[in-house]
View 1 (cartoon, rainbow, N blue to C red):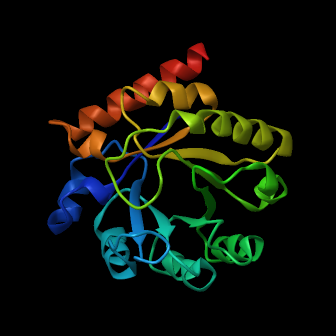
View 2 (cartoon, rainbow, N blue to C red; view 1 turned 45 degrees about the horizontal axis):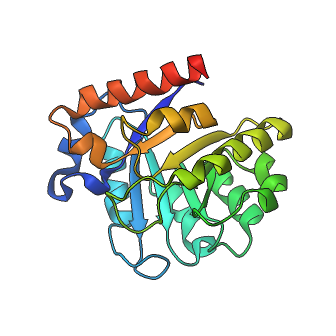
Length: 222
């Protein structure tokens, strides 16, 4: 598996999400941020929107659940059509059971970590997961500045994944742009969420390609 670019629709035009997805046909996934105004101080979209877009867009849906009680709600997002579901370990009561339920629904199971949450306590969970998301901003709002302090955690996550022997993708989300994606790739990330960098560009499709090329070059020289 090579570099994957997953543009965040948090920065897209919410009134025309299917059209926005069509502007980035080269994207590997559509990253959709579900916020509940409890786990994070913002409210965005939910299951009906994901269900509708999953039917309308050619790309698979990467649902990032920034919500309280994901143990209760996350599996239903697989039923709604999301191909990958990320829950925050800080909010999950039983992360192993939840990951298994998500996989049982046919979706990829992913665990997200806030910037201050260490990866080491969850090393034994890696075989239960398909992806780990290291947040490089505090979750809740788009357009934030990339936190370089998260780079060592990305490296540690990559080392732990390699040591586990599990086939786990490593995603970064927050402030990813042409200026920061190389550092993330060199640290070991292979899946990149980019919101404002993509949808703030004059040509979003060209930006997806440029981000992919930069990350791939960094990996080649890393």
